[in-house]
Image 1 (cartoon, rainbow, N blue to C red):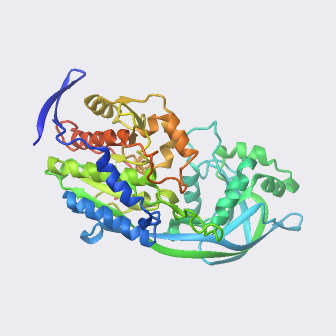
Image 2 (image 1 turned 60 degrees about the horizontal axis):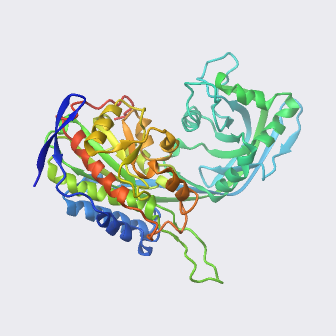
Image 3 (image 1 turned 90 degrees about the vertical axis):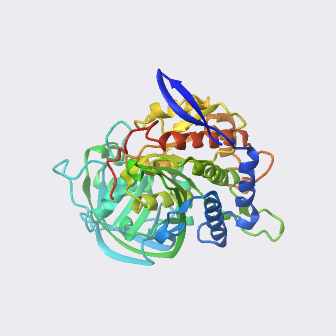
Length: 500
């Protein structure tokens, strides 16, 4: 049975549906215990653990009454991925003026190819900045050239693209390769090790250069020294130019291990009575790191599975229970539920979704991401990651008042804005938030990040806190009711960045 109440906020009266069935900790725990069990092997994309995970999510949404909204009427949409790991590489740089050749040391540069084998001679070297092409008379085209790109745009300049966007721009402008300059020498060993382990990306070849890599700032500075160029000054001024020639060419031979495989997003929806009024999206990532430790002959019982109980079996459990409660509401707007793959690889499932959504992106009036929610036993305060980024802040405050929740205004949770699936939608001008009590509990969040996060110890145990997560699930139900109705949210979608 549904009950109706009146909510008065700032002199406005809203009709809201009172909860008939609050979410309990036990509701969430039963899903987490299954998704984070050893039987699911850490939910790594492309494994048997993925098959169990996506089937479980689809079966739960089906039982709740959702309709399949994936490819060809199924619950699933394939996401083509490619894992690339460096095997061997050599690169020689030739100074065009002096004619001397230098082989770059393999501990100061690391390279991999888009394809298994890359061989190219006489590649002109350029340094890319972050300005638009044509901003200065000295700018040169990058087509057919090997490009060095600073990892970060200048901090004191606004309106510049971020690193990822600038790299994609260079690739689409024809750069044969992009080598990232790691300006912070203290971070070089970390980048080098990460590059050695390989990287997974969407398989779409147009988003990858034929050659990609990273170089230490010290080695880049040494490369420029004979020409008299000041590497530090150039990087500081990189917001003022698009690309400049370095007067050098390079020969490179690179062998790369390339593994192509297919993972899946899971998509369901609650059909609205008036789909023309727009759509709402709830999402969370299902993936984790799988069997993340090697066998130890001296300790055969050693735990090897990164189960990902908090990150992010907890978020998926919230989505399952939210869907279960919203089905009976018969919303006006379609409400979509999305469980993404490969978030841990760089928000890849979410990126695949926005490239080929089930409806045009500009249909979505709001997006809510659920990630890492099982960290707090406090039911009052919530962090709103994305606050201040869109026009919906006032509406979020209305729902918070309706639910008796207090918004954390410290802004500390904003550090995670770009690290969660919702950011992919913000990039397309779709209002997106991640709202949770877990990120308002700074002490426990910090303890988790410095401890079990991405480790075998993120599993179902006594440290799992679900009181806040249960309250967060109820808050997401309230969000669904508020934004699913034109009576409470009459606004239309505001996206200006959709490709569809």
